[in-house]
Length: 481
Image: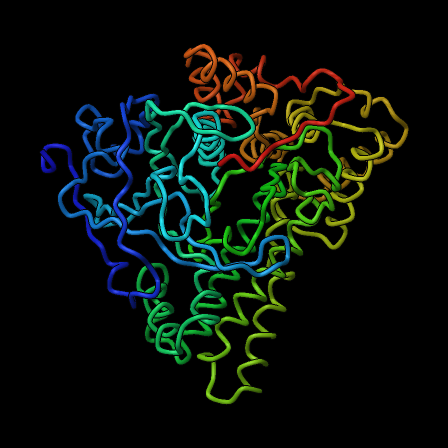
């Protein structure tokens, strides 16, 4: 059956010292039923979607070659260090695709593990569908992300604030190695454990660095580069992760753990959606510096292996981390240039972009729709009627005139850089309500269809572009995933 389905599982993570994991089968569930199956992801993994059943995707059956385990890690949660681990996730194994790529296959909501800390190890249908929607939207936007292969219901209730339908999401990731995995090794393991983990991360994600003069410094620098590029991509589309703890930052550079995340409507750097982020630590405008802070914690965890001399090791780590703001700034500015149709670079480009953002904040303009309007040449919102904008527009037109490319070329560049649609929070909630309360997946499937190509600017995307109706109650998200 495994050959017919296409499973080709390996368990390289088990080559690490035993301190990094606990062998753990998923807890069986009563009556699994398939709710969502991502055929595109299945095909990319070399799996036959028609033969993937709910029993395997729920953990009731274990494919040949699998060796389920729960991973140990630690991390700073809202700035406070904690011992963590897979409290409700089980790594089934690593699927080797027909092209030779390796992806973790994890069951999220697969039951209790030794790291559950008193939790039930389960997940609810709404949060699992939410992760499916947002991660697929991120993929459509071209942002590195884990993906969802499937969501199944378990036939069992779970209890949070209210009773919910239990569900399990099959998450696909380049790996689940986190900054927090290295913090765990540094804090609770021996130097040999840290060396083994670093070598494993290099072999899995940065094999070109294995023969570098200082392979562990190479690893640090490459993770910093990937995270700088990732966070810049978040910022230029208005994505707010919501819980940027160090255990939610991957070594691969993928976005992971879609809990209280959401996309910004009205532009405001202070935007926070998470119900537990009362101080705004992970607000939209704080995401770049928080990423830098997290990477400093990663660098700290590598200090024992960066150099034999402690002082030199610290110097290497500091110099590497100091590159993050420069790298991020470069990626962000290039992203903003693309959003404004600019092909070359000038010294005043940063001010041009920031001045527009200041205007958007001042006039409470919608982030995505402002750039969509600029792309289409439609000046429809109140922002475009202000004297402030008229001044900025003249500066923008002058800047466009100082490059060789035509306005038509600039518009095309903007079309491929400014999404026409994002997963608007009210649309996501509408889809989840219908799916969870009415077993109606139509709204969710229609939403996913338009999010598949957010740069299409097609007529069927129009109804998904409208911001939510004004409300006195701010939108809130919760750590249900």
